[in-house]
Amino acid sequence: SVAQMVALLDYQDALPSARRLHDWAIETAAVRPGDDVVDLGSGTGTMSRQLASLVAPVVSAGMPVGQAIGVEPNPHLRAVAVSRATAAGVTNVSFVEGFAGALPFNDSTIDFVWCERVLQHLADPQSAIDDIARVLRPGGCAVLLDSDYGTRIVSDLDPDLAAALSRASLGPIANPYAARQIPAQIHAAGLELEPDVGSSAFIFSSEM
Image (cartoon, rainbow, N blue to C red):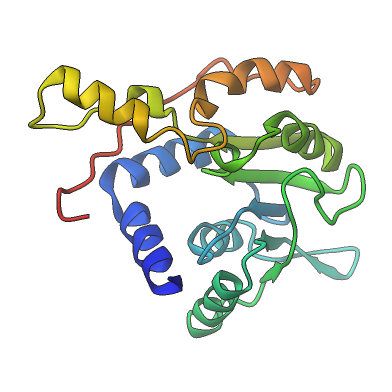
């Protein structure tokens, strides 16, 4: 259900490890006021709103610049994102329908792309990264954050049973080893990989 999706996304966004990873990634990317930024797979818009605050409009050639655009294929999540942005008074953010691999932007028009926990859902993640490379301006930057389910650990289980459970749960995931494949895919897209590659362990409560 939509309520369950929203609850899970909110839970993940609130994890201390997620916040630390976000802070590190934003600092490394050096997003600037006036940038045009895209949050690919924006969900409830949490990161879209944060990015909007970082690119808060500045005036260039008499026109305000600095917009955040959330790209989200799920209309229910887009509605939640719009409602939350409106409630928070964030005016330089918008949400559009779109898909990874077919971004609704012209070539070389975007300064920064944030893509978090999207590639794991794609059968062809390379096409998505190629399309990110297409829309980035020269000197632009992308942050790609994703999961590697091959590193998942379930506590309080016999190790052999935990390994079997982990293998069995990979079936419904289109790209379960997404994170480990990103460096090679970045190079294949013609992008330069930042040497400081980071990671963080997301620890979920047994109540989730």
